[in-house]
Image (cartoon, rainbow, N blue to C red):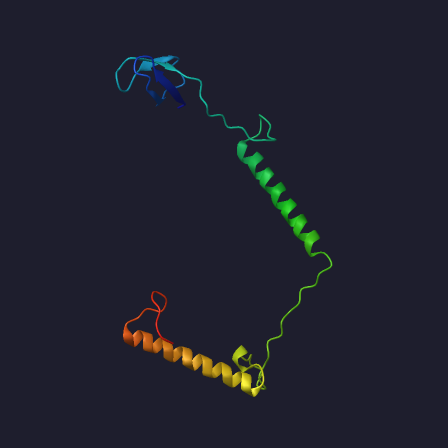
Length: 141
């Protein structure tokens, strides 16, 4: 059933109403004052750029989306042309397991990281004990 727009000639109210296609009437009673309302030309019109009239709208939209994605992939290919993907080799321990970043560096650097992490954990523990949240208000470190 098509949706038609009407405007009342008495009170000026604009409203929409579903009518059967066989109902050819250009007038209908107003919803507010029951006066005569005249059917307006509909402002809605489904238009798809580049489409043909005998093709379903979904097919036209799908084709346009495919064209846009192809354009995107072409741009990415040009952008990455001649570049190689570099991998980062994570350090491994003698038993073949990956080592955490904490273990990287000389002895002083590793020890400094451990001290910092320990101090941060202690700070968080003290904030919880004081009933302070982590990010809402300032507290001593």
